[in-house]
Length: 251
Image 1: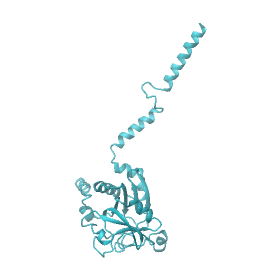
Image 2: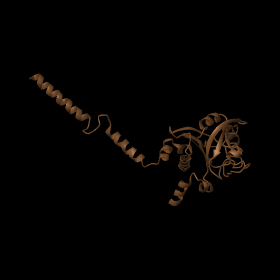
Image 3: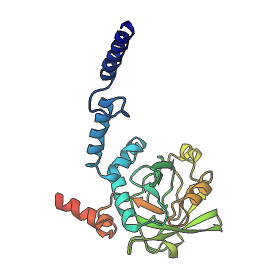
């Protein structure tokens, strides 16, 4: 009789304990229902945030000097280009050449691969790029979207051919020999000595220390966007037409 009573008592203790540690209706695989509810709310809210904004915030690009407007333009244009290689390079020429204003992003793995220096054309400006051209011998940078092609060995060593994607804006890039290459004048030493980066003949030149890595990352159908908040360019860009028109309508 005594043994039977002990069995009943033990069963009751186990039953009470089980309800004390797990609410009725809670999944047995969830250890913290409050956390689960928070994650559910976060997932619901994230559905209301554009994909580009989620990526922009997750990579903390604002802290690296890249505005959300610049990234939004880049994301929209690259989507329209339908890149063969999901690597996006953004050169933000609204920034000083003293800044690391080139951002290379893996859109699939959602990683910032590299943030570094990039030069503009000598006739585009001194520390800041302000003038842009698609003309031969202008020695100015051309704004807009480019598709990367193949590499070659030139006078600057390993170089990357760039195909301008925007008619009347940068579609003479191949004709002008606008390529990505390394240059000694893209360095922190040059900035210390002159107060700015050196300038190219119109090419988005990068440092000799990083040019091979950069070119290998980008070669074969990745995207490059050279940005400046130029109203004439933004109105002319077919790759940004839907976005720019929507913004103008909203205003």
